[in-house]
Length: 95
Image (cartoon, rainbow, N blue to C red; front, top):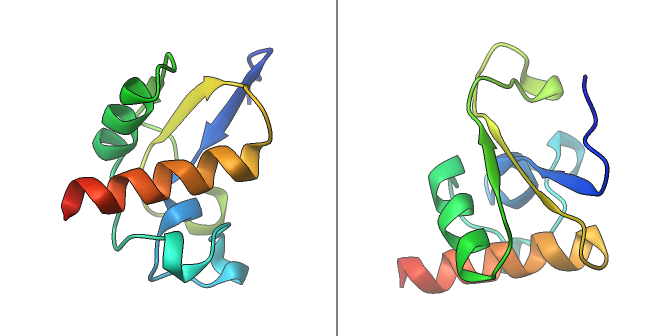
């Protein structure tokens, strides 16, 4: 895995309400959304003023048989706060 300096990885599983904490969800169910996509994460990250990069061919290690992709964004503050805010904004956009 190539690690880009100063960037953090956001997997859709981090904010997926259908996943358990053991399966990779990092936020509370209140801040999570059902079946988030890389595209939704990209749009929200752009709205937040970040410079997101999509890597659509990546496989989440806990579910190596699927290819959900991932998004990398510049590290600005704690990763948990960033993931939580992304989940909240996706939820707001969905209505």
